Length: 459
Ligand code: UGA
Image 1: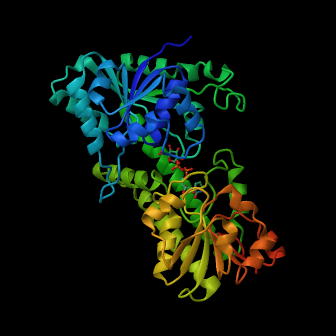
Image 2: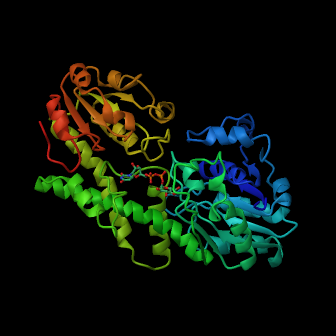
Image 3: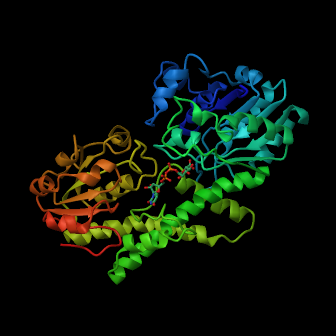
């Protein structure tokens, strides 16, 4: 039997809420704090507000027992053995992370702390944040032996967040205190000793190899850098393959074959080598910019990161040019758009290349019929429907009477459409696919002119 630790999680966004219910699933007693009372009420009522596999089930399982929701951080702090800060660190104008929410939470914790508590950075933060939190504690008169600071970054992906939390590749615990390292080791013990995976109702317990994840102990600063460096490296991999895809287009080669050949080298690996319209989401764009700023502030030349960003931005304009060259002119054209979310499996449209492309196409004088299986409600909040933009019931409605159909998000359901039906519905059978979801030969067999990324065009 593992020990039950009293945990507070501050913030109930993707990271905070997933961490809260997963810690409960691991047997701990959790208080999840958010200063938005409406959110707190919704969560108490079992409405989890975000689209994420297993989250509703876990919320339902624990909301009246091991997880409690409150807006009272001071009261929660007094009970806690460990407090995980999982509030937003949005991007400010210059690209640097805005840490004002982290600072506000740290100040409030400082005012309420009465017994030894481990303060854990769970949000993605720049290196040295731990030292700032320490300063906030000291400025508020908190004695040094009442707290320690740990950086325990989260590597979960939207759409598979619960699974990623409970089946991580690794758990990173960065701290300069042995006492704090012990507390974190206890918290993650159900995963690291493998006992969680043996439970009959463990999430995905029987679908995986059950290999317990390693817990990597590092210094606090190293852990802070691990998170930024990991995300920047993954973004770099995507920009790299996107640049290679442009080269393939110029040489009339096939980037899918090139990526396959590269990925078979175990030092490179096949993942994150999918070319497309550029990475989006609430993490990569923000984290690459923040990491670039960290390097600048520390006087380190990391121009490679600027290049990653440049390639990512130009991937969208290249796609726009591709649509233009497929259609000759854009003004007055009616286009079907499949996908609004920044990737398949989520309703999140933050920094979605699809949203940006729709805005560019409308500016060029196109009218759009869009469909997304989950993200239309969110999209409507930023892209109001009107004569130039309509939201449709399904992919086939989106294809009706259009001059071309664009695939902008890699939803699985977009990869097996009835192509004969699509062909019949469209004014002209032209598909411009920003996610390479189809075999170009299959499109050709179905009489569709097919333009994709980094592959020879078939029409
Ligand atoms: C990303 C990381 O993958 C997580 O490890 C990390 O914890 C998270 O950010 C975070 O910092 O919180 P996420 O933003 O959910 O997770 O999305 P990804 O699945 O990584 O995709 C990011 C973007 O890259 C999407 O727009 C996706 O379409 C694009 N992508 C991904 C490609 O264009 N090609 C690929 O091969 C892979």
